[in-house]
Length: 273
Ligand SMILES: *[C@@H]1O[C@H](CO)[C@@H](O)[C@H](O)[C@H]1NC(C)=O
Ligand SMILES: *[C@@H]1O[C@H](CO)[C@@H](O)[C@H](O)[C@H]1NC(C)=O
Ligand SMILES: *[C@@H]1O[C@H](CO)[C@@H](O)[C@H](O)[C@H]1NC(C)=O
Ligand SMILES: *[C@@H]1O[C@H](CO)[C@@H](O)[C@H](O)[C@H]1NC(C)=O
Ligand SMILES: *[C@@H]1O[C@H](CO)[C@@H](O)[C@H](O)[C@H]1NC(C)=O
Ligand SMILES: *[C@@H]1O[C@H](CO)[C@@H](O)[C@H](O)[C@H]1NC(C)=O
Image (cartoon, rainbow, N blue to C red; front, top):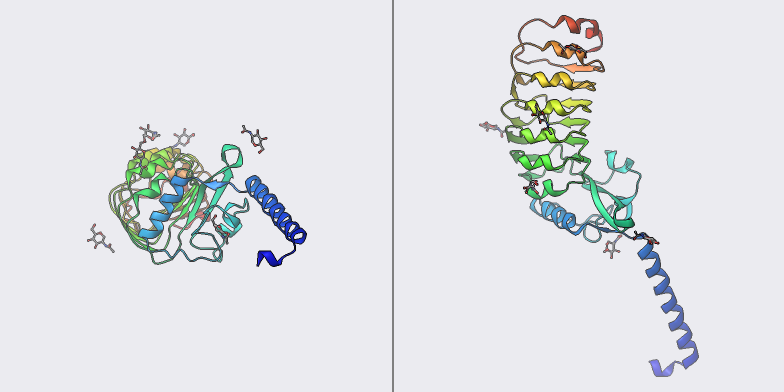
């Protein structure tokens, strides 16, 4: 075949493609950062254990994880219910824009059955984690305390069990914590009183019991507290009246006794007791 081509046009074509390849390589090097290999390994292992298919059109699970939409700074497709699922978001500005870390992970309502693999707790750049509405079982590991960048954490509507680890208290940047409808047991750790940025707290039907720790008086940014159908005993603590930003409170079906604190009466109109 080659011999039948006259030489000059062939060289011309070759030079043209050679140039194309080099231009596109240069562009790739400028724009394409790669996923932290440890995080890539961890995520692939988690998905494998959860039986999540790697055939996904909306997001490049099989190749470079943090490519395309997953590395875009707009996160609205992550938050959207109709957006890609499972899904991740990455921040790719590390090591002079050559390295991506996974900052958001969503595996929502995909009927995932099983425990939470330990590898999840190595994704320490996560700020958003939504594992809601699956069939996750087993306890939350103490290693969850390693995810210190966490801001929005949801395990709602699963079958997780055991006590909440006190290491959760290390997540001091957390804004929203949702474990409603699970099979936990034991008390709320007093360490959660370190969550001073917490705005939303959903523990309804989660199985937690015992009294609300006095350290919760520090949670001055709480706006939404749903704690219905939990076994929280004793009376509603006075300091709830000090949660000055509270707009939604649900305590129905609790084993709370005693009167509603007087500190609270001035805001009863806007809450749902
Ligand atoms: C997925 O990533 C692989 C490896 O980086 C790449 O070769 C492939 O083109 C990517 N696919 C899409 C659809 O982005
Ligand atoms: C970062 O990348 C830019 C452009 O690729 C380069 O000019 C600069 O020297 C790099 N800086 C460091 C600290 O590597
Ligand atoms: C969490 O951090 C502790 C202390 O650095 C470490 O020993 C442990 O292995 C970490 N857990 C995971 C799952 O990486
Ligand atoms: C919840 O946990 C209890 C033991 O603490 C167990 O008997 C029960 O079967 C569990 N329920 C579910 C739905 O996992
Ligand atoms: C959290 O709160 C407890 C007391 O409730 C305290 O002993 C602990 O040092 C605090 N800090 C962290 C990072 O957990
Ligand atoms: C409410 O907050 C005030 C001022 O921050 C404090 O003096 C008071 O002890 C708190 N009350 C309760 C019941 O925690």
